[in-house]
Amino acid sequence: MLVGAGILSLAVLCYPVTSLTIHRAGESCPLWAIPASVGAKFSLTWIHTVSKRAVAETYVIDGDGRICLTEMVFDHEGPGLPSNPEPGTIWRMQDGRVSVTGYSRCLEELNLGVSPFGHRLETGLRDCNLVSEVGPDRLARLAFERVPLILIVFAEVWQWRHSLSRS
Image (tube, rainbow, N blue to C red; front, side, top):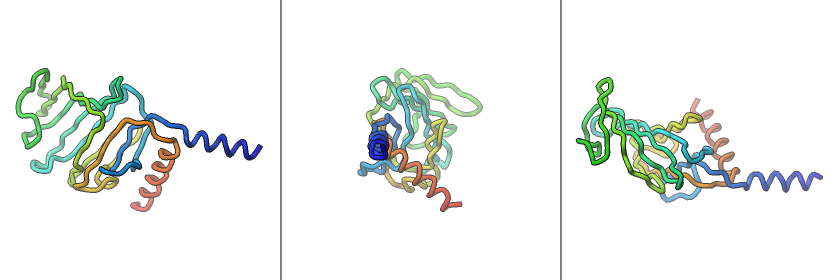
């Protein structure tokens, strides 16, 4: 009976769960993972390294499991930000901020440089401070992938213990 329970527990922990994951560039084991499904939305909010102003990007997981940019919001001009409407995009001014929608950019994975001035991923279920988890000026990779449940549990425990050590 005990052996059967152990085998069942091991099988459950090895079960692959579709998740949004964060990796340091070049590393295969996720630093952070949260179960997600097609249609899940998340946002990245970061501080532009030149203007020192906030930029918010909203993404959705499409039916092919790709990460698709749906909106970018900013209140300033700066390198790497749109300076005028691109084909298919819609620009709206709201409270002194520019909201750009209508993007058709979808990626298998999202590679990004972590802003040393602030970079957060927000899912609605849990947030991740990329500066403290990945490191400032480090490269991160976000992916929608199947990972064993044990990796999610391990990442959760690591996050919890890491947050306690910072308190």
